[in-house]
Image 1 (tube, helix red, strand yellow):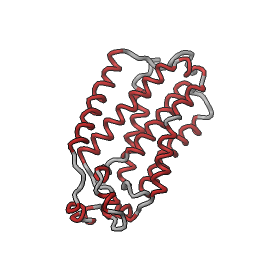
Image 2 (cartoon, helix red, strand yellow):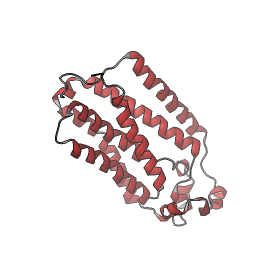
Image 3 (cartoon, one colour):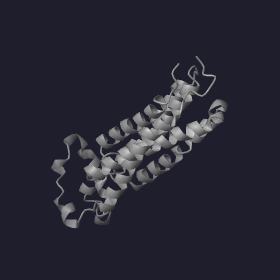
Image 4 (cartoon, helix red, strand yellow):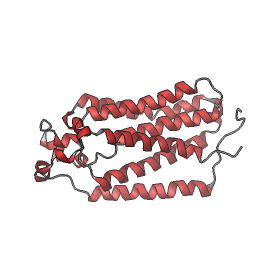
Amino acid sequence: MVFAQNPYKLTWKREAAWLLPSGIGSGVSLLLYQKNQPFTMEQVERLDINSVPKFERFATRQYSQKARKASDIILYSTISTRALLLSDKEIRRNAPTTIVLAAETIVLNFALTNLAKEIIRRPRPYAYNPDVPMSEKLKRDARQSFFSGHTSFTAAGTFSTAKIWSDYNPDSRWKPVVWATAVAIPATVGYLRIKSGKHYLTDVVTGFIIGGACGILVPHFHKRKK
């Protein structure tokens, strides 16, 4: 079945139900960020690598500025993936709907990601690495490991793009390629975040799942009934 119309339906009540809690969660996360303090030098020196699960300790030996910059470039580049949707005639005709879905996905993922970071306050892997300058470890960012925001935001963007495009083109033979690309991009970002010493494996896996879920579920719950 090919949709001859917009496969999504927006209502004020539904959009408020999505945006209000997400907006509140985002606001709370920003307040927590202002109140949470960075490590002191004494706290850094007391960090015990034995508190890190054995299967994740390899991440504490990673530190690459090139990998960090590469992950930044991919993250910011994926912002443009939603713009690619507008190359589709039907999606372009319903651009306001697509913009609302993208905004709701972004706000929801932002709230979930940053609330987790500010509540859990997990030390980043590089905080345990003796080769990393102390000045890096004393930044507030050094206590925001769980879970990976780069991975979650990238996954939310690529999965949302793939989901919306697939709903407009349910019979396209390009769907496997679109979804494979949607998976590969955040997976690559996750690898780079581990390589840079910013995250553990569980950080990027969780970010991938949360971001991907936001990207799929927001459009899914807006679909019209057949």
